[in-house]
Image (cartoon, rainbow, N blue to C red; front, top):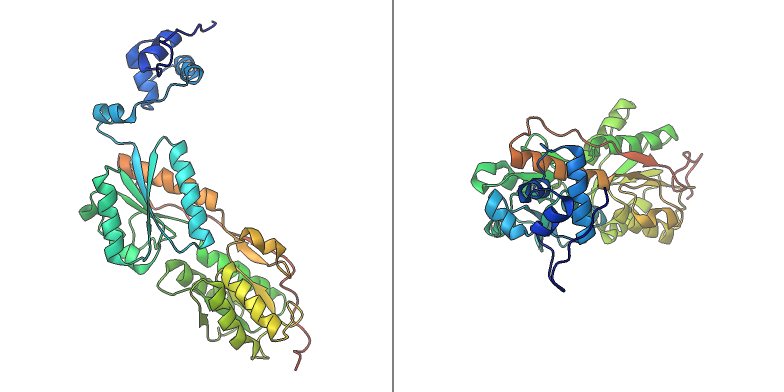
Length: 347
């Protein structure tokens, strides 16, 4: 059957009635397709979707909200910190939300305090969001997410603590840190220093737990750890301290940005990577493969995190979430910054 398009008035925006005429169905059938109802024959749905595409019809979300009593809008709360991991997750959630048919409204916070997050939640609720994704897995964020009932909308926390937030999604941080640490141990290193992120972040604590688990499993006692703030500057400062310790032959950094600063500090101190010190990061930022030397790191599938966050939020909005999400497995990417433990350290 060949569809013959109707001829709406010149310059007029196509409306649902135009789609119905072109597809040869009722106005109600078009409405059911637009609103995602599944009680339709596949061939009917396909005909309506083809007409929508041919006409360039765009649903009136305001009118649809009046009928369905749903805004088809979700909120995303993130940080203005600019770190690659959270920024990438934010973009993937926005894309996954749009693909799922939602309008995505974002709130980017200068500081991740409890008060700032509560204000952001209230701001998004005032704009009629059906649910919120929170990309800031700090202790303050988890405290906000715990009080789902008071917030009035479901909140999904990215990289949160499954024991402290009703709904959370993310990569298995502890497993990724174990991969990184075991890689260094398998290369013969026995003194693996860990440079953590801020320990108020669940990701930093998860990565430290993985480091400790791998060390204990190898029969080794984890040494003292250093704490950074996710920035290259903090990695550089920690690197100056690490460079002075001739017993250290391997460092696991909790993110690639800190690893970049560490590499610079080791270079300035005359410690060669990986000849004298092996370095492993976490995240696999785009620049990791082009550093000198290319950085061994743990890759996180941020696209999968974004899609899963939207899946959980949709289920929570519909009241059908009955179990916590499974964490996404990380992947170790081995490059030239890690090598077997040297026979001796240079003086």
